[in-house]
Length: 321
Image (cartoon, rainbow, N blue to C red):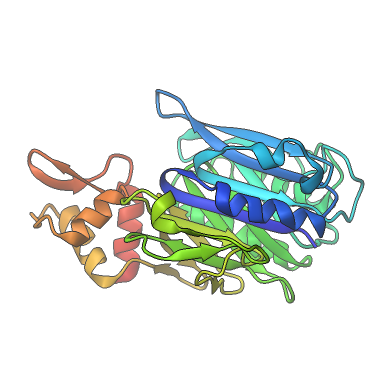
């Protein structure tokens, strides 16, 4: 019974409190643990970093001491259905060209997929897991895609196809977006929003202490946590089955099922539409929130779409109609 834990935020966040709760899940998943995250270079390029071991997380000298700060984090504790070794330990990483640039993708899977080892043709797994075979199949089918819309819809189609082979809870990222997909009859996936104002308290399940979220979060920090088990006593929500959840900079932007569903509220969508059409808008709380989420920026001439965000803004606005 593997477990997944992922984070997407608008700035580099410290997840040590929740991470410790996740590490303890290794007692029930003793066959390996791993965590992948992204480092950002001075030129803005993001590179995947990875630490993993084929041993229980609670026995590791490394896992409890990790101090990871990143906008995107994907972690996994493993209950093995194949050989226990380093190559079979999640997460997995591959580098492909899509939407006019190279990205390093991180992937972790909870579930069992029968027969997927026959699917990949060009990207060959290094280990023997069904999970890595599924990842390779996804990567070879996303390589060369030209637009954000194609990337999102193709990823959704591929995950739906793979769900026919068995059970599939997935966290996957290209360093900018975090994607989550749930298709499992027994294992749920859970979603937690941590947006300001951070006034609540959180307690790790089965622990005797709690923290004030405001003491560990910046006032302008936006984040989403996704996990296969609720890690704290906060207000976690279930992910819908067979829908692709798309996060960026601490916002749940879209869900893809039979159609693309924008997840921002109607006022935020109207602001985005107005700015996209070249209209002037007042800098109110909605605009400030969209600036915090990096969809908009404030310039000398007013409010504008943030650099490199126009494609996703167009997708949100057009699909809302």
